[in-house]
Length: 455
Ligand SMILES: Nc1ncnc2c1ncn2[C@@H]1O[C@H](COP(=O)(O)OP(=O)(O)O)[C@@H](O)[C@H]1O
Ligand SMILES: [Mg+2]
Picture 1 (tube, rainbow, N blue to C red):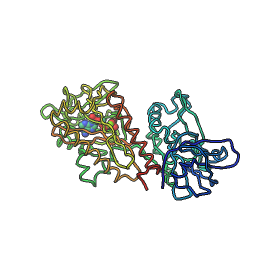
Picture 2 (picture 1 turned 180 degrees about the vertical axis):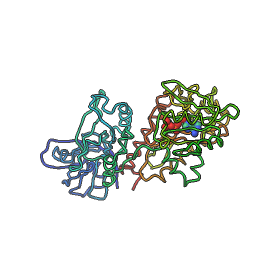
Picture 3 (picture 1 turned 60 degrees about the vertical axis):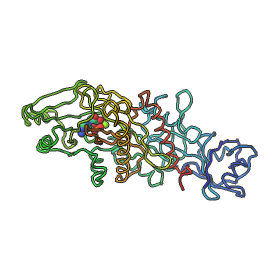
Picture 4 (picture 1 turned 30 degrees about the vertical axis):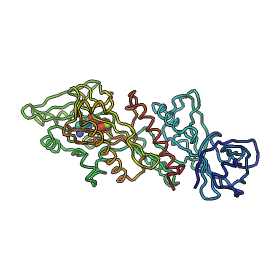
C-alpha cells in the first residue's frame, strides 16, 4: 500500500478519465498501469489512467468521472493505492447527528464542536455531517452538510462515508429498533462506526464486573434497590448516592446520609436550589423518597465516596479520552470540577466551578499532586481498555467522571460514551479540546485505512 496527499482537479471532459502527475504516479507505484479502479467512499469506477504533466502531486478527474463517483469537491485530500490497480481518494468522514434546517446552526448546540472537529481534518479529508434520514441505502449515497466559509453549510449528495462518528443527541430515540438497524447497516458494509450509543451507568458497572483490576475503582452499586438494600448500604457506607441509571447532567440525583445520633439526611436539587431534609428514622427518609416518586427500577444506589475538597466543597474530575492514530487510548484532556456550596454534584449547572486539575490537586494533595495525577491517568486508561474489551461495539472516545478520595484512591462514577465538551471552555483547557479533535481525526484516518500505521 502507498499513501500520500494530493490536489484533486476536475476538468470539463465528457468521457471518464483519470490522470496523475508523474510524481504522484510514481509515489503510488502506478508507473506501468493503464487502468485503475478509483474509489470514493462506497462508490467506484474503472477508468483508463493517463499522465498529467505538472510538478507536484495532482490527480485530474473528468467531470463525468467526478459525477459518477459523487466526488464531494476538488482540492486537497489523501490518496492511497492498494494493490496495483486500486486507488482511493478520501477519506470521507461522516458525523452522524440530528439535523434541522437552521441556516447556521443545523446541528443545534453541537454545531460549533462539529465545525471545530472538521477544522482538524481540513485539506486531508472530506468531512461532513448527516442525519439518519439522509441516507439512501439503495443508491449507497448520503446527503451531507459540508462547512463553508462565513459559518454557513452546503448540502451535497455523496457516497457512503469510510468512517462514521456517532453524535446522535437523543438517548431515547437511539434506543429504537429503527435506529439500531440503521447503525447495523454500516457494520454490515464494514464501515467502522463509533461510538455505538449512550451508556447506561449500571450497564457499564456490570461490564467491569469480571475485571477485578478495573472493578476495584467502581463504588459498591445496586440497581433497583429495595428499602432494605438502601438501609443496609447506609449502615455500611454512611452515605450513598441515588442516581438514575440513564441520567446525565446531575438530574434526579439524591444524596442520603446516616449520621448516628442525628438521623438521616437527604440532599437534592429542586427548582434551582439545594434542599436538605432531616429524618429521625429510616422510614421517614424512605417515605420521602416514595413521595418524590423515584422510579427505583431506573435507579442505582451507590456507595458515597469522600472526595478531596477545596473550601469544604468536593472536587471531582472529567477525564476526556480518545483513541489516536495508532488505535491507542490517550487522555486528551482533564478538567477538575468543584461542587457548588451544598450541591450534591459538581456540575457547572448547579454552581460547580471548572478548574485545571493541576491547580485542584496541588491545593489538596500538595507535593503528591503529580503522582496522584499520574495514577489517575493510568486508572483512566485501564478503565477505558477494560470497558472496550467488554463492550460489544467499537469505541473511540470516552468521558470518565472520576473522583479521588481522601486516602488517594481513584473511583469511577460514570463513563460517558458521547462526552460533552464543557471542560474545554476553560481558557487553559482550550488547547486540550483541540488536541482531542486532532486525536480523533488521526483515529478516523486509522479506521478508514488512510494511515500508514495500518496494514
Ligand atoms: N458515589 C458517589 N460518591 C460521591 N460523589 C458522587 C457519587 N456519584 C456521583 N457523585 C457526584 O455526582 C456527580 C454526578 O454523578 P454522575 O454519576 O456523573 O451522574 P450524571 O450522569 O448525572 O453526571 C459526580 O460527578 C460526583 O460529583
Ligand atoms: Mg457525570
